[in-house]
Length: 385
Image 1 (cartoon, helix red, strand yellow):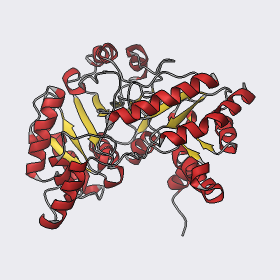
Image 2: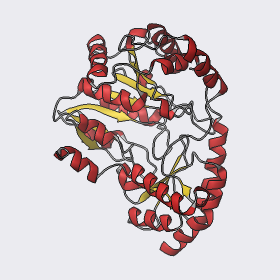
Image 3: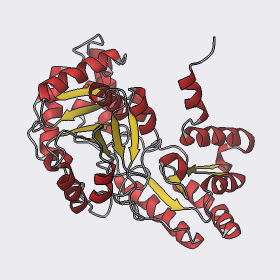
């Protein structure tokens, strides 16, 4: 018995994030975790809010843990719809809410519902590395529309990427890996392009929406794009990455809403999710207005950017998330990451995000880890420069 040709190919180009994470685990086993500076995985280290922990404790003993409708508990969908309506300034119906197994599960549900083999999905590089796998899961083709040097997209670039096979475009703001927020002017420019293509679905992947700094506001995708769907999760904003809970919110202004909702509910079953985790649906529903202390991430960002400044490495200042996407001192970002690994510093090559020549640092780690990496980072940057 062997693995499929498709999976064999996937293994050969598997996520650079996981590769670096595994390399970090090996280094920690040799040198001890306190001597390894691991910025590979966006795994939140801040504890969940107390309200979340209290809800998990109290609900776990009292609620029913069996099946419910595939789209989720009706009362949860009602609460999420009310919350999303206030958040986005659009009137969401509970019927247009589907609870999902995190944002990753939600994206696969949406893509399963809309893609036929050969259909195209536009992404804006740099982009989250798993998008390629998600699109190919359902026979689709990933089409890259590169952002500019400040990691902001343009309507002109997107217009050139659109073909008769384009079914959707994925927007991710605040963006992983760059930390940039696509401001209203940029989104209106994209909206102007898509008015000529109203059949293209805008998929907004936004698990970092509430992790923003310096008073930056994240525009409402459903308010700007009538044919849109939001996919989000509690993974980052509530530090619940391992619990796999999120939701899909379909814009009430899009065409074929009822048909698309039905297709996504069926996709939830077909993909084997069946339903989002029962306990976490109820916990999430009770904690929709909660969030982690974002000021902790902001302090880490400021500390890390000061080190990059001293090292002479360029970057676009993150307005959100907990990632820095820094320019490599040499063209070969993989070689740069290898040199950093020799100093027991783990970062992810930009090649994995569709943007070679850069590396991603995830600063969802203690400040001591960031400070501890300073000397080695500056040393490697100086040697390679």
